[in-house]
Amino acid sequence: MVELAYRTYDADNHYYEPVDCFTRHMERDKLHLAFHLETVDGVEQPMVDGRLANTFVYGGFFRGNIARPGSLREMMRNIKKAGMLDESNPVVGPPERSWFQRDARIELMDRQDIEATLLFPSTGVVVEPTFQGNKEILYANYRAFNRWLEEDWGLGADRRIYGAPLISLLDVDEAVRELEWALDRGCRVINLTAGPAYGRSPGDPYFDPFWARMNEAKVIAGIHVGDAGYNARNAAAWGEDVV
Image (cartoon, one colour):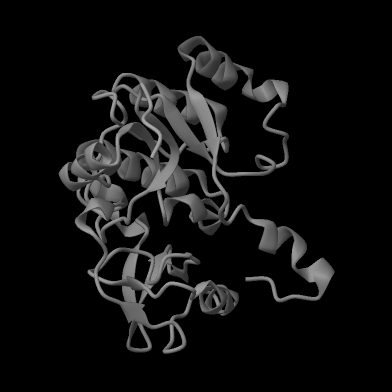
């Protein structure tokens, strides 16, 4: 093995979200709007605003077990059925603690000679289309999620784990406000949903106040693969069901 004079910087790693990541810090008067688990036809399903929510992670949240390796095909098939889970997507045992415990992740990073990591959501990268452009629901959930993230993982103040808060360009003032909150807590990378921003290019002058603050703070805009609403926009044109 080649010995390096420096430690590695990992630009793309993840965690599994617990069931309360959207509810723990949700404003009490908006708790009914939270992305949460609900029993539907005897099966716990991720829900928001009375609708089934699509997720890639089995069940949407970490509850002790994870989907078996190689089950992406079944997961995609279930997403086409509006997120319903079935026996075609069995789970395996629990993952290493580093997937859901910060101290364990730091220990693992030290063993692997990793100096720092950019840490992205697993479920959080796919949730924005689920909110269907509803400003109140979207920003209430993103605020709650980001406060959970800062509490459980940190946004980068320790210079080891740079948790990427969820930022949406649905409303430029709300985006700037949430960015300022994150910057005050050491944020160096954010997570944006890929693709157009509600009828505008992300480079539209409308978003100049947001990008100006990003540029001034020298923050990384992370755009991670996930559900960016492509199904809703393009499925019908390809003869597929819109979910």
